[in-house]
Image 1 (cartoon, rainbow, N blue to C red):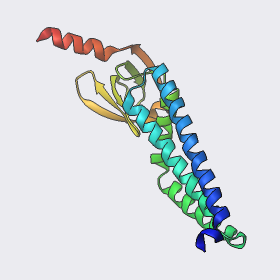
Image 2 (image 1 turned 120 degrees about the vertical axis):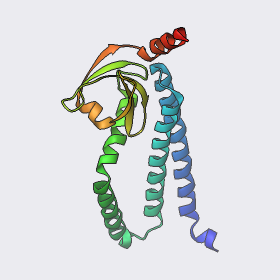
Image 3 (image 1 turned 90 degrees about the vertical axis):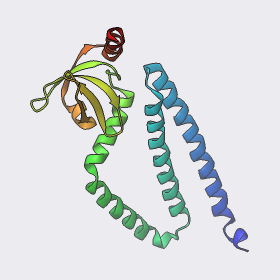
Length: 179
């Protein structure tokens, strides 16, 4: 009885779910292809794929919410959803800024792990080696050996000069020769 009553909605849900899965496969393939072409490590590839997966799940849930709601309740549904999203986005705008910067850096960032760079920042004018690029921040090694974190959004806002490509490889080779 219940199956017959919601037959159309279930068919639409199956089509939407299949479409979301297909989009996820295509996006995962495209991200992997772009990353391998640019020499990006597997951990960052999985991180970006996870971002897209979460986004697609949210889209799926919103579509399902719209499908199973009566037309007269649609305005209430959207106002509630946008209110919650607005409050959440305002509360975590800094985190979202760093995550968005991380995604931008994944696709369009001229520096890779191991590069020696100079950040032209009045608060942090250092020459560093990029140890790791994560979701929220970069892990940087100072010339004195200290590790520091630097937010992704600041990395996109500040001027950066490439000093030397693959400096971490040469540093490791120097260390192995001294042993």
